[in-house]
Length: 240
Image (cartoon, rainbow, N blue to C red; front, side, top):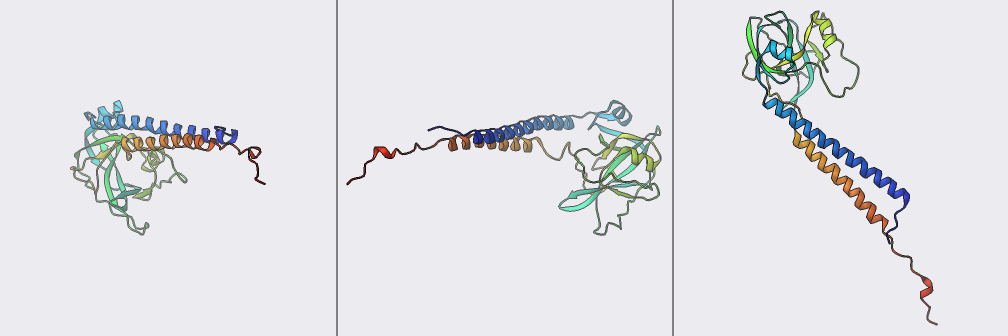
């Protein structure tokens, strides 16, 4: 006999709705990530000034100028081959006077964080090539914002925030950053840049899992709602 209880129905239908909603959200994230990866793969090659002015994220750029040899930012919690390290970010002064940060790649971080790695830098004029991306860190954050000190370089930070970095550097920064190409001199370690850490396929797999859990909740509701009919004792007579 199919006889679901109100409590069971409400609980499992709420659970199924939640799982279905998460599945839909992951499906949307898959579509968004696919578009982002396509944008990355098909990005045009532009002069850095034009790419910055037009806000062309992921554009392949080249720009002429020179590095600031004294001031560097070390972006913490960057993992490469299972080892903790940092991304090295250095101001680059363009020919027109504008300043843009350049991500020069990965360096290992010593166990003693009071001893930061040296950042050798050639201050001569050069043309750099790389990818244009957002300067500021995105995504959820834990803890208080990093504090920059204009007298202490290099500086180890967890997140990038444009305004306090500008104050420490005492200059106006572009809202963009250049991710230096792997074949460019003046860089370090790993420079395998991606549109995002998680590819579209992973979001698709998560969506399938959430939809499967939603279906499982409905199946459980059906299974638990069936009850065996009570045995009618009056139909049986005890033999004397």
